[in-house]
Amino acid sequence: MEERKTSPDFHQVKLAGLIIDPVSKTPVMLLKLLDSGQVIPIWIGEYEANAITMELEKIVPPRPMTHDLFTRMIDSLPCRLTRICIDCLREHTYHAKMHLSTSEGEKVIDCRPSDAVIIALKRHTDMFVHQSIIDQSSLSDYFSDYLYNRERLDQWFSAIRLDDQEGDVEH
Image 1 (cartoon, one colour):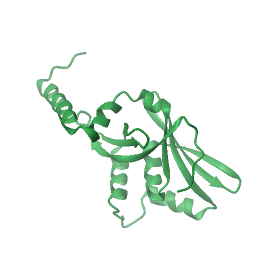
Image 2 (cartoon, one colour):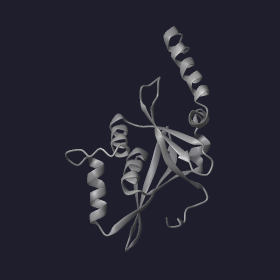
Image 3 (cartoon, helix red, strand yellow):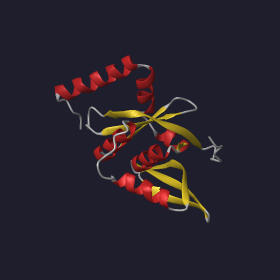
């Protein structure tokens, strides 16, 4: 794998998995930092979670999906996807960039993190998260424990379910 010139403020990640948030019933994409093992949770849409699952399971749809179309467009152009970077969390919304190498230099395209991850998986491209995302990810410890201490996360999820069943919601 070629050496990447990336700011020290970025940390390489891999997709650790997908889970469903038991409270909101929303898919959560878990990105694991390669240098520390810490896990960053990012809530995503159902369609994006399905597209990630299809890519992980190597399921080929009968017709190209949007992410397939986009990767085919990249492949047909004189450019190469070099990396994706999840670089910002603003007003509870994550932002990402796709970096393309062209004969005219680097082109950077703004996108959603879930779309960037799907395309990075399809192209076997490196993925990075900015240090500010790690610093702002208040739930990352819980999700890191998921990978290393299943019992503790099971207890956390059980506590959430018990609170839900009791119906005691503080306002």
